[in-house]
Image 1 (cartoon, one colour):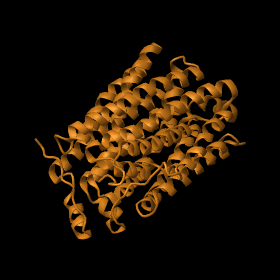
Image 2 (cartoon, rainbow, N blue to C red; image 1 turned 90 degrees about the vertical axis):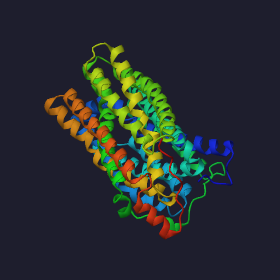
Image 3 (tube, helix red, strand yellow; image 1 turned 135 degrees about the horizontal axis):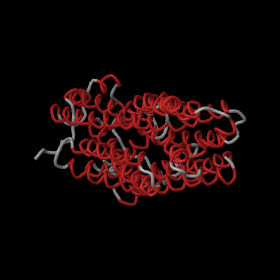
Image 4 (cartoon, rainbow, N blue to C red; image 1 turned 90 degrees about the horizontal axis):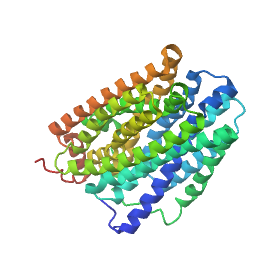
Length: 425
């Protein structure tokens, strides 16, 4: 339930704005390296597999650190955990620009993942606590829009700054804003919504015994594998195969991505909330259909010869794929008690980010052997597999209810209450 002391739109909006801005910086720090691949390849004389390892190790560290930090977020101050994480990843981003060797750059990028691991589960838990269940997907979609804007801005800045001044200044530029936002989290402007007592914390083992949650995690692995592959190699693909320059790839993919992903996230959150009022599996149905629509759009982009058609196809694909971000967090929180919100997202991110991190690395290996286009086509097939898995999630929710009896029993044991599930009509 929302915090009864902070029901005003102003308080909710201020909290959501701060957390969305931090999410913007989060993903700008993460994606600024992507359009710099051609420059890094030239300076360090690396293979595609080695370049893919930059994202691989960031994702691995992010995944490994997410779960323990999420467990802490359900037990201690979420604000403190967030602030420390933001300051840490911003310093690591700045250090990336100081790397003298490729190994040093890999280590710096991995430390970015360590700082970022502190953020999403705690922040998403705070947002869910501040907004009503009926608006949950829309609020999470706004938060995700910050991520998507940041991802696009990072690529655009990396392309522009990299081509004009070299790759090092790009890291310096995106590292500074996080230092300021990290300090802002400790101010009274960023308040912490109320939540249940610590006795309501749910164990990881109990969460994984819920069939719908387990199926959601497996589907998320496929989606993360594919999504990280597209994000990591998209700019390099259009430079190598479609005649884009480094700056052009960063600016145009960033601009198109910004328009597509933000629009898709907000529309997806709205559709998911509306469908959830009619079906217990409305949010997961939104996700599944959107990814099935995105797959042919990506194949079209890979095959198109015109730069305009490539960008238009990527716009359509990005719009559908970004339906995912708000509804998936809202769905996880729908299924779990308030003191398990950070833990449940942490478990989801731990598994999906850890296994999904192999996407960019394996795609680099496939690119070295068969070509980058073949690797991206395989990523599309993996994404379709994930989309079909979401229908399995819908089946389990239809069979067992949005609140699985295992968690209902736990709520009863702990003295918690079960919010009513929407009636199916």
